[in-house]
Amino acid sequence: MYILIAGGGKVGSNLAATLLKMGHEVTLLDNDRNRYAVLESRFEHVARYGDATELFVLERAGVERADLVVAVTGDDEDNIIVCQVAKEKYGVEKSIARVNDPRNQPHFDMVGINLTVSATATILALIEHELPAHELVTLLDLRRENLEIVEFAIDAGSPAAGRTVRDLNLPNGSRLISVSRAGRAEIAVGETELRPGDLVMAILEPGAEEELKRVLMPAAV
Image (cartoon, rainbow, N blue to C red):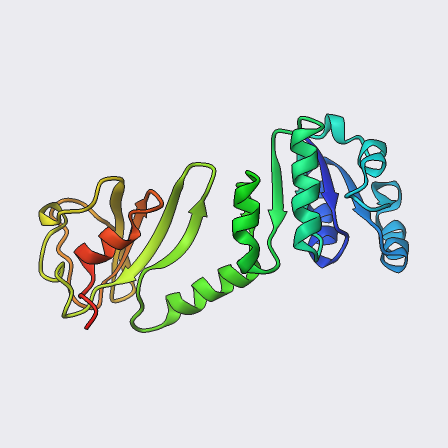
């Protein structure tokens, strides 16, 4: 694959190095003179100086033939522009964008950038995952597939406690995946009984979260 990366910081440079080792063709763009000098000494012709939001920079880097564009600059607006221009002007079908501020995620969604990565959102989800008792936490957001994988804890007040999976009135567009108990996980099947303390993973369509919480979690007081 030919992969065009916008942003030569730690994320972009490490990504480029790994992709090159995998045998892919890579171009790494950065518009910081000092950083570019370091990138050039490390990657030679793979690194190019320029602002990836400028059309002539993208064209010079061969965006028309790119199989994938990855925008991982420290500026969310730039990442949106790069991916949007690559898709709408040059017909690049696949793009991945870094979301620096999770509050900007709706802007990426609005312009159809479905493959995004947010380190902040991921770390927050992992923190919530480690809490002894937590509400519904999104572990993986499969935006392109219009699905998400969530996790939640069953406590003594849950309407699902003591019931089997087949007896639950789960909302349409949702399925339980696994149940973890005492550090061991098993696939959720019809006869699996949910008990207080269980951690349950589910896959569902966006919008079904509240109904799933109603079925599996105690009502708020």
